Length: 245
Image (cartoon, rainbow, N blue to C red):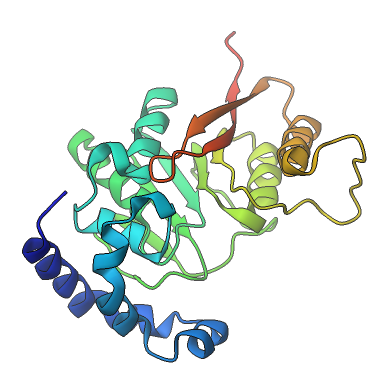
């Protein structure tokens, strides 16, 4: 944790650089609800958000990570980068889907790749507010079933919501491993009815089934749970790897 004076200085510097991008990224719903610009909202409420990590991820979480204000044990992007590095290594060409307004996970990965002098990171998200970050290719477009994955070794997603299914289908079709930390929402297609599956497990069950149904024969899938660094809640992880030969 940093003191309030330092936090204020870092937040003001961040907004001076990226505030216009955040304002341009506002949805119509946000404009109607907030009744102010997003940069003004951030400057007004960042202090309250900083001292309430228990609320989980918010628009502030990525910003706090970007300005190095989150302790490592409370930083979900630092922790996910750790898990990806342990599972797959970061000396690879990686695609992140759903990076958010500021791609904090990709930013963490790029810092480590820079030390390795290996690997690359590309981010897809139509909501990107930041369009220029050193060492990161930022693509302000949705990731879909038609997105080409050229020279990609790994696809990752941190709570990518509706894009989860596209990640699975495209990665499996191209025989590329993926690592996804699932959101707690339910994006199960309406035509998929599982009366024997508890509501809270339905989305996880669908994701794992879709993965198995589309998985290359020489791949394996694993599901596990982790603890969210901010909220402490359990999150489901679905990941694939090539089988050991």
